[in-house]
Length: 126
Image (cartoon, rainbow, N blue to C red; front, side):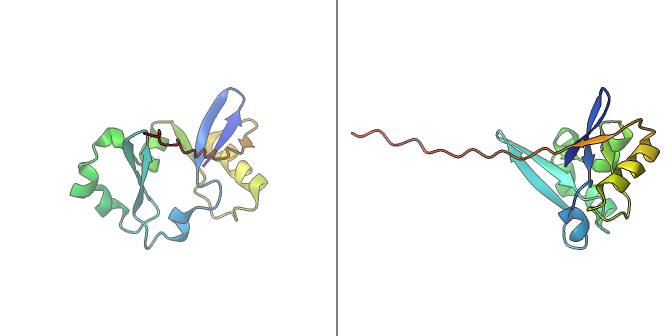
């Protein structure tokens, strides 16, 4: 997920880049993310079982504040979705698609790299 910038509007854009949700849509109904002791369930709206999974008891147990449902977030204006069949290596074409879909002036991509930090604290000697 990357951020697209349109002057003062910055939003995450789902599926701008290659997506396992799209590639494995027949096998992957969602994913659980863990951050700071909070678990989030991200729904795969590309899955043919999306509607059924969305209505399942499993999903309901998470509570709406812990569910990321891309189409719902798009309706709320929180994200953009690159739901086009343009090959993901064609970045300028995808930007053009998003420009037309969301009536953007000059969208630009900002690559958001994941940063991972690991460290070990030595045990105190007794």
